[in-house]
Image (tube, rainbow, N blue to C red; front, side, top):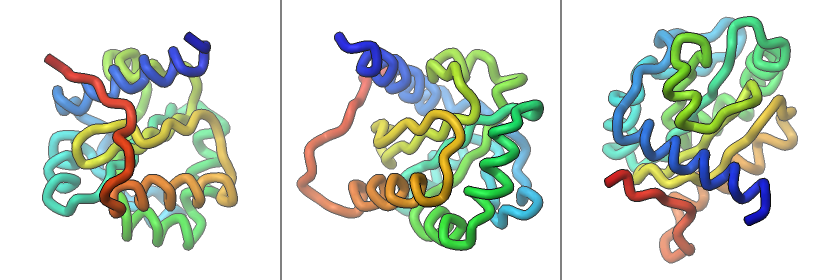
Length: 161
């Protein structure tokens, strides 16, 4: 199996385990300058995701991470990204520090990492590292479109049983 495919499979397993266990995320707060209101609890976010039939955006960061801060202050502060996130996703921000079991289950080795999940917990995309607005927007739109469009092939899933 290709190294990248192994990482995606590991991330999918970890995300599904996280999805099923509902581990807590970072405190719920509006990030300064970003305008995105991040959920503080994956369990609550899952409920909203299922009720509204919206995908979940999980942004995993660390306080001491230069590129995490840069992404929050530039990419996630862009008004078009904010609008797309609020229109099409249930956003969760999780600090890697203090949530090591969840980070390990997700297979995260690089910060920041953004994981996009369907309402059923399917991994739609894993975005590692800092990405600028022009790279993030099409990936958000593609993930949101996958959920809105019926009849597309299933993405990677893991049976947690």
